Length: 168
Image (cartoon, rainbow, N blue to C red; front, top):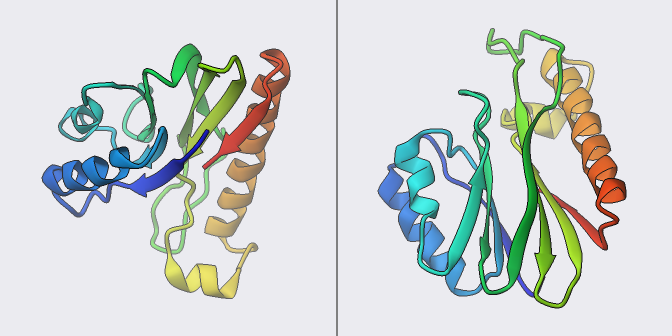
């Protein structure tokens, strides 16, 4: 991968702001991982000439995706993967369950196989990040889902005999 980018499309911003960000990132990238694209009005912004994409399809908590240049990569496999079966109540009183990650297996135009995974883990509360409070319910959920996310990526890397694994 000559250049890859990650972007959070931010539910609190308009789909048009996502379009502007993607246009900027697509100019200098071969691969983009993205979160918060579960609604068609947002995921449709990934449809650009010369690009292919995969967006999770398992419901409202499956809002991650990957986009790649079609002249650089060919899709071999894609999946949505549930990162946990556990449920926690976070510090805001919200349930942290049914989170999914997206994976694609791509073959580059040089014959290299790469597994790309993207997850949107429950760790968006800045004060929790500063405190590194892994005993909180949000912290426990984060650790469980991060382990499962990495584990599944490694399983796919072995299964497809990939040359690289990129987790975002």
